[in-house]
Length: 200
Image 1 (cartoon, rainbow, N blue to C red):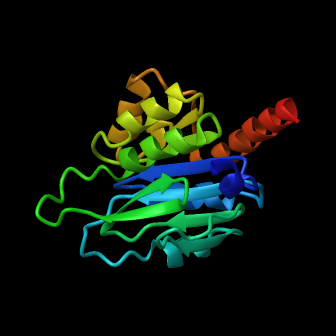
Image 2 (image 1 turned 45 degrees about the vertical axis):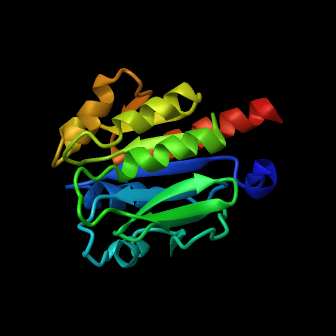
């Protein structure tokens, strides 16, 4: 079942960020070419906040940016963003949305929640990217991606406005590459291309 849904998407790249993540995300997508993978952005927002991320990023990306709806078809060469009041996970049917608890808005585990489901569904065909942000969200998620054989990339803390998220990720020992955002798309393309050549 899973293979039929995801057969045209060899890899899913999940990008987690929080405070200070907008500029590195713009740098990332300005360097991202049309390719055979799908991207999911996981960013901390207040539950009542109407995100402008889709509108802002579209100015910096050659890829179409789409807001996630329940069981929306996942296509390669697209960037997916959940609404600020939702947790998103991946299942055999596609994306699944769960409302965040308004009574307990913190801690926000948007990154961990998705990465754990992504590792379960896509296994080694996963890439996790942790950009600038405050807090520890992402640590549990990258552990799941690492255990599944996926690739984990963190933003070089020296380039971060808020270093906590990438530094916590790096301290786990499960980060494969520490890079500037503009250099990440090339590293992702090389990893995907190398893997696809091996499996052909």
